Length: 285
Ligand code: NAP
Image (cartoon, rainbow, N blue to C red; front, top):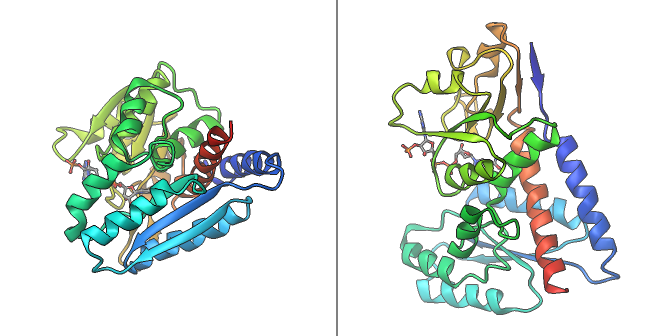
């Protein structure tokens, strides 16, 4: 039998904590700037949803939109204005940026005020995550995986975790967060020899590959917890994860699974709000 570990109860609990903290601010509010280049529909949809959710928690969200063909110099100067603005507590950059801004993006990560880097992209925060520093901001998606696992009371300490994916946005930072929780982590990727076996051997499997239905019945066994980070669109236009829930269900395996949609993604926005709130609280200390 499959038990679904939905994101909503976890995100609700983070949301309530953020609202409480903002209310204690006696009228002042945290401020997040979302910096977007171009009109990518996925970016715009995430921006709209994040703005609605964070505003509902009392966070002031402002969008800064630059044209798709913005020059590197103009991009840098707009970014620095926000980075140096004392009224701004957090900055979220919609990535990937257009290809012609590759160098400017590198420059930006090095110039980022780490205290405002609420999605954990700058080297100072990434190094902090490697050290296990709890003040460092981790990328929101990576952090939301930890929140959903802990939110359901699943023990990580001493457990074998197989993680599929080694990107800088999800896999690598997440592996460090899992290590901090005393899990034993196996990181898999496209060159991994026997992915199914590596998954079957784990207590917890985390799929962050961006490959629809990659984790099927032959990858799992009874008693496992499966966390699906993948967001893919299938041939019929539906949002699906990396885990093939239907196949696993038909095989009659007893596992707990985070659904897509309605799992990790829901928690990610709540973690973003929490990070903005942390940055604001720290600034006002
Ligand atoms: P990415 O940069 O494309 O990295 C994918 C990783 O998975 C790579 O390390 C790749 O291995 C590995 N991989 C891909 N296909 C594989 C396969 N068949 N077998 C084994 N390993 C495989 O993607 P990402 O940015 O990390 O994102 C991963 C997924 O998470 C995507 O679906 C993305 O949409 C989703 N995502 C979700 C959220 C959320 O809030 N839920 C946020 C961000 C991203 P190599 O290194 O060998 O290429």
